[in-house]
Length: 141
Image (cartoon, rainbow, N blue to C red; front, top):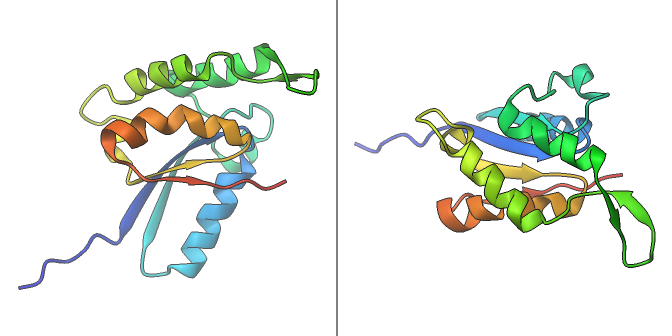
């Protein structure tokens, strides 16, 4: 007997714009009608996320939005923008928080999705390297 392949995919997502992961999940749902796409998005966006129901109240993710909004970094061109300082350390901290517990977001995820800003994808590198989760980037704008 051939075992059935799961037709459910859980996407763990984070990024600044709440609409990006919602748009891509809607596209996947339309293009893959035989699959159930479950989006677990933890948006850094604290203004528009309520429109999509993706505001992260999970403290394991919410601190990243606070860090992003409260940190200015100098770009190569000399401009100052909101950003992440020491993103490698932040990625390690996120990993430690998100893998905890038997029903952790990391244990539920089949795939990772990062959006804008593109460098926020670096936050998921420990998940890729240690858990072997695939990482997709979606950048619009």
